[in-house]
Amino acid sequence: MDRPQFHFTPNRGWINDPNGLVYFANEYHLFYQHDPYSAVGGGDRMHWGHATSHNLVDWQEQPVALAPDDLGTIWSGSAVVDWHDTSGFFGGKAGLVACYTQWQPARQVQSLAYSTDNGHTWIKYAENPIITAPELTVFRDPKVWWHASTDRWVLVVTIGQSVRFYTSPNLREWQAAGEFGTGHGAQAGVWECPDLFPLSIASNEAAERWVLLISTNGPTGSQMEYFIGDFDGEQFTSDYPAATVLPFDYGRDCYAAVTWSDIPATDRRRLAIGWMNNWQYARALPGDQWRGAMTIPRSLQLAERPTGLRLIQQPIAELAARRGIAHHYPARTITPEATAEPDLDGKALEIVITLTTNDAAESGLRVRTDATRGATIGYDWTTECLFIERSEAVPPVANFAGRQEAPLAPTNGSVTLQIFLDYSSIEIIADAGAVVLSALVFLAPHDGTTFYSKGGATTISALEVYPLTAES
Ligand code: FRU
Image (cartoon, rainbow, N blue to C red; front, side):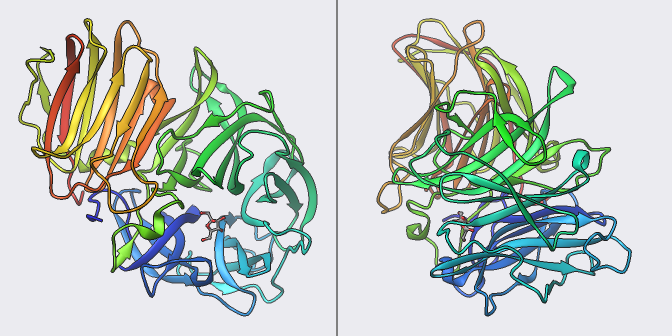
């Protein structure tokens, strides 16, 4: 894999899920599932790796935070600021507490660790594990938050194809509460990496609904979905019929995304990051020194769309720090015979493009091309679908090829796409962030960009391109 320029990757070794996302003492922390000794990964090798940042874009790798012990390897989980020392770990001051799953072949339990130096080193709690459920084979990925209206901590873990909530006054002793999920949403695969948080509605910031993020891993690979509803401190109820599945990302490579805890109240954003990969092929992808990347960080909100209330994702504004000089291109019309190839080659680009149909059946871009290979970012005007076609961008790996598509209705005959192209990936944001498509591509060293229109003409009515740099 060609090392991405503006996505987080480990210097060495393997990564999967983001863990312990928290902001404290002027630092954003990104912990992650990590095999520091090889790029192989696997449940029996997991540690928490660690990186810190001042802007969510430039990351500094730190020493490994948590290593396996007698209770098992260190699987996914979360971290919070214990502002009022409810845990008693901090002598009355504020400190960080992490809660994570420990894995053994036949047992998953939840454990705690705390840090008295702002997240840089961790002490495992002497009374671990803090929660067990011997009857469950899937019992993992605790996400903890302070629930202000009931004045206590809440934790959500996955239990098979559903989640269970626990409550606690002190982060150490937990009481089981409600469950949610049986028969709801995607049920083909096991549920992993839950997150639950209140989110404001873009047009009406005073209104809030609760959003539950779930990652599901099953026969068709790794996918994410979300639920919108209400949470009373013990029980989540969905606003939608049980069969509704709301995809978080329509691409194949966004998994285990969860959100940062304790973002300052003045910021008000809910920020998420995911693992840009899919268990169906993650371990088989090229890479010997390192393997795995995170998505770009995204800011989440809810918005009313024609189909109802939806989660919207926007790239964080901080990414603009990586922009080189902007290129604005004049509008142009392309036809099947006459395609345009303005000078916008590059392997790391942000492209903001508006396509307006004249009578085209399909139009779009070819990115990372040379004469023979490339990836297609296309829009099908007849089926109203946005797609990425990466069958020429395939490593020798099973289940990787293929088209990934998302429903996307045009607005007044146009669609606008914000595209983040990096050395090994494409992320597309459309429909004000209600449609996101993330996909890995393997096309080193191709760097060409072209446009195409099939079955008629397309006007490129707006086009802005920024080269994206490796450092701010
Ligand atoms: C999700 C996941 C989690 C687990 C971790 C192990 O990708 O399977 O459920 O905690 O990865 O690395």
